[in-house]
Image 1 (tube, rainbow, N blue to C red):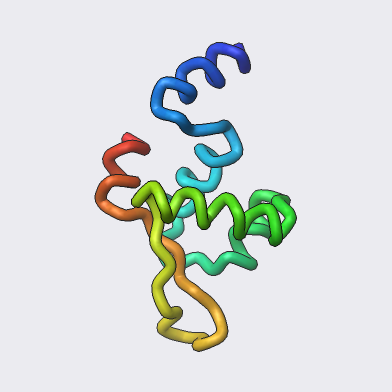
Image 2 (cartoon, one colour):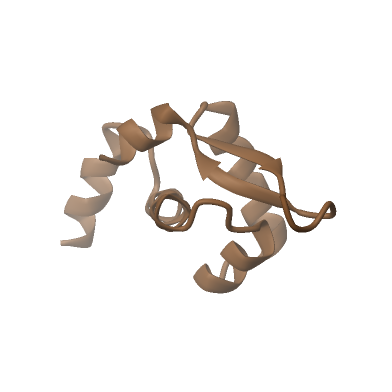
Length: 85
């Protein structure tokens, strides 16, 4: 079953961990990178690399946090929302 999941995502060039990131950001727009890392149990350095890749693909974006200038608020782009659906 997991292999079918991997095969399905490979068609759109998304790995399962990236899919998880997209799902959590989609359900929680404005989440910080630290919060996302904690929720998914992904090491922060690895998450930053993953977010860089997703942002380069135009699927996510980092916006200034409205409550904390030291953090970014994560959200899906329109393309990211479309891909997730």
